[in-house]
Length: 93
Image (cartoon, rainbow, N blue to C red; front, side):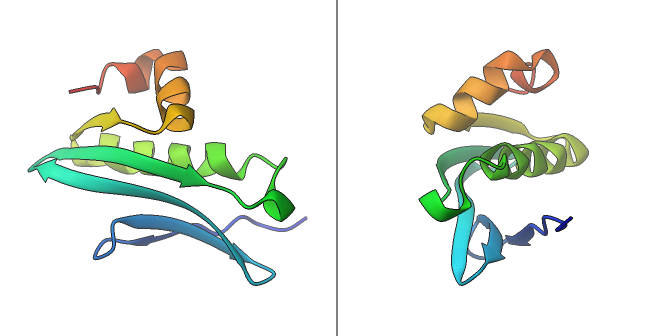
């Protein structure tokens, strides 16, 4: 079983998973201190169906919670997951 390794590039505001020359990623912006706005979650078709998008959102949300930050999203996928989790929905700001 392959372990999903997600890296965080703070300078480019991007969480990524690389596999077989492809990248699944989540991007965000920082419109103000203590807040992240998720803009995109992209998983190439060849990497689809394995929950990578959910793992990317889970990773950013864990980091947001650990940092005591708030979140917003214009990414339909991330928004849907945030709304399904009361713990994550409480962080909207």
